[in-house]
Image 1 (cartoon, rainbow, N blue to C red):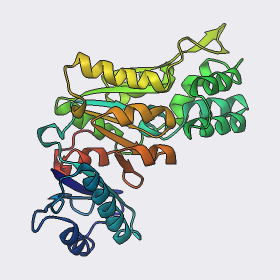
Image 2 (tube, rainbow, N blue to C red):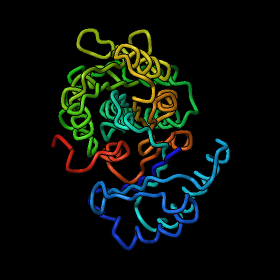
Image 3 (cartoon, rainbow, N blue to C red):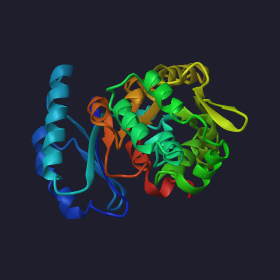
Length: 313
């Protein structure tokens, strides 16, 4: 089976230069079938890949072990650079995915919405601590969400618009990721354990086709401290992936899921390409790919897009 070694860096860093790539040649020659590897630039200085076959391996377990060792050796060579190293099986025509499922908070946007609400409500430290523990997988997501929402009781509903206007920003590369995939026929869904007030607006700004999230309940212009049932968390994200895959008559190999927290883990593991983006350790360890240095355009490079194929601002 052919594999792909993909190196990506932050666009501004331009960390991938010819002398850096030259360091990899003896590593690839050691691990790979003689002269099987085929390198190419996806973006000068920013993204590079090599297609290759492991040398003489048929057993899947041996293949996985060799993949881990190759990744470790390349990461060691790149240890002083802000470069992400990923190895994936070559999916051939299915490499460019037809369905994108993306988390919102700390993935498509740079912030955690509930933490921003809590800051205006004067309970920021208490809520952000619960958020961090929930995203690390230390707390039940539904219970943690109800506890955090309860602390927001009495906040003016108008503060939500203020947060959207003044505090939220798209993650670098978000619009290019969504619009490039849309331009090449993919369906894009924003799925969040956050709140519809924000997902509806962020989805429109970034270009997603649909969005889903939890509902903050309001009475007399103020937050009631409750969220509408059912609470949408880890299972709801997996369900969305499976439902949209079926509705669009796709195979799982044609899907991509990205997120950063423990409630994203099931959809990331179930997708054809699952990406942990600037993620908590529990997610980064379990995901097929992890991006820590690059922006969201790294997900396009993982699919084999060149920079000159990108769409959107």
